[in-house]
Length: 391
Image (cartoon, rainbow, N blue to C red; front, side):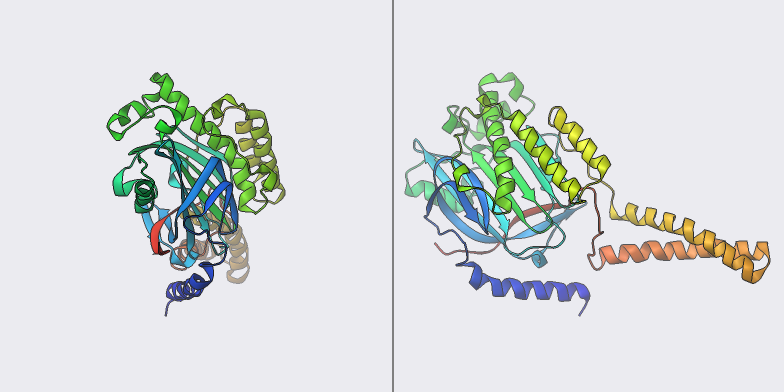
């Protein structure tokens, strides 16, 4: 059995043992009504104003995305997925999908791909290091029928309550993660619940390219964006179970843009960055760069950092500079002829550098051993259902 197979088998056994335990350990029950916050896998998640109903509780898996290819990572353990819905004036006004890890993982959880896109309404990184991340994104979403947010569970909930479910939504996604835990929240808002009916047929009017020329629609998007931005800091506290009960009441999404949270939010982001720097999670230069972003308008997330192959290449180069200098001296002392010593050094540089580089890559690609430091988080998504609660 290979190392990789052993890792998968061990994780699968652990996940199987966890299923019976997780069914009753902190899992919300379908049909439960919650407001203010909801607790999923020990993490507290802020909710918009009003009552929400838990419509689905399931387990899903994590998918790591590399070079555009998604790979299921069952060894990361099961992910608790909870879906809530709220009915407003006979419509499913808001659907909240939450994913949170049940087991801690030593190598971080990464960011969603949408936090790095530049073709959305917005994609903002509040802070990030190789493992710690707080980001949010905002985009239009055409999804109706079985593809609607929450899938069949929300569709069934709507039928049972005689409510209309839209096929067009404004999606605000938030991801907060540290080296061991993660919570991923997607707030789907029906624009009709905020006073502006919308359908997939008119989605072009809501596109990021067209929204600036649609003042009424832009106001809806700004309200959703403002509410999500205000929820980011409480979500960071909730990840660590530190969200105070007194902070459980959150304002409605409608009118959220009228509140100016910039000063408070920037102070919170600066504090988070200072904590990361104090913990050694980010370098001084990275701290200064992100602090400069806080001082001005929120910046759209940039491209990812170095690949592991680049890291291994530079490590091999810098290693050879030191070792070659030492070897040249040793070879000359023992051989006594400069030409022969020089030829031997050249052979050592070519052969040993190649061996060093591929040895480094072997640990990363074959055994999945990650570097001790990284500048940007991995891309990790949550999706495929492993098992679901009975209804």
